[in-house]
Length: 358
Image (cartoon, rainbow, N blue to C red; front, top):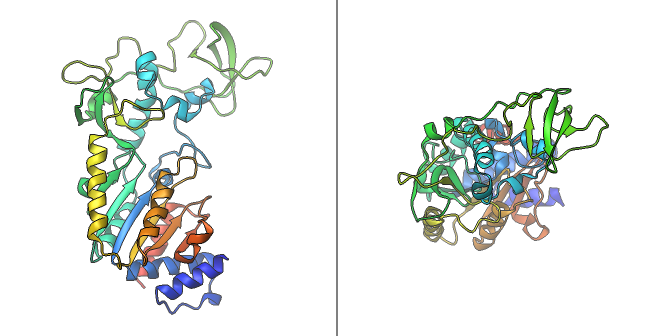
């Protein structure tokens, strides 16, 4: 079935590649390159897997690695990514979001971003980028920038009030960086004091450097972690360390759509969505639209659904789905899709670019 889909894609793109002479991965790369070469417009759809080559962890899967204390708390990423923490425990909330801000915004977009921008800007109808990532990397990519980006979950580069007052402002990186959070430098075997069910208990750090167990091996769900002897809480920003506020002194939070979030200000998100919809209207119905989707998982399938929906809207569109573990496509979309799995984003995009230059 995969070979059939590839053959149809290759035929559609009018390539002269002989499929039997190359391994399946090479055939996929060549088919993707041919589709991009013949495309009139490029829609870039990216999820968390796109950022792995920039040193960013994903929420789940083989590259999961968002914030080590989550393991000590036995808390799922989605539970911590809730706006309620800014009301109930703002120092815990900002310890988490400071970590994410520093990891995401200080990291540089890898070369794959520039390759996609280069391809799209060479096409008759240009490009647009739709992403669920909140790192702001597409804003910083030359040839894309704010006017061609739809950040459907918002971005860490913007702030709003916890109690939304309709104001959104650029994040002051210095304010976030100045939040004092104890370093999580625990090592396997270290002894710590953990607050569990309202009581302090002795705990041992496990092999992952974060999970905690009793001396008897029972797993613990900590609500506070400190070194023995009454040290500072390693889960939260230090008492007395200023937390971000608006110019009027109101408590602030990232302008990001969190889980169970009814308080996010969607004004800029909606403005970006409007520009995206206008771009789609400007692309002719008969255009050869190449949809390159990278690193979009199934747990929160916003980006996958977007790619598949747009594929259905344009009769001459093709979907190139790049995903290490989840490159599969629905059967009814297979004839117009190319799946590339088992390889990272940057490596795949680089190989496609090399094929385009031959």
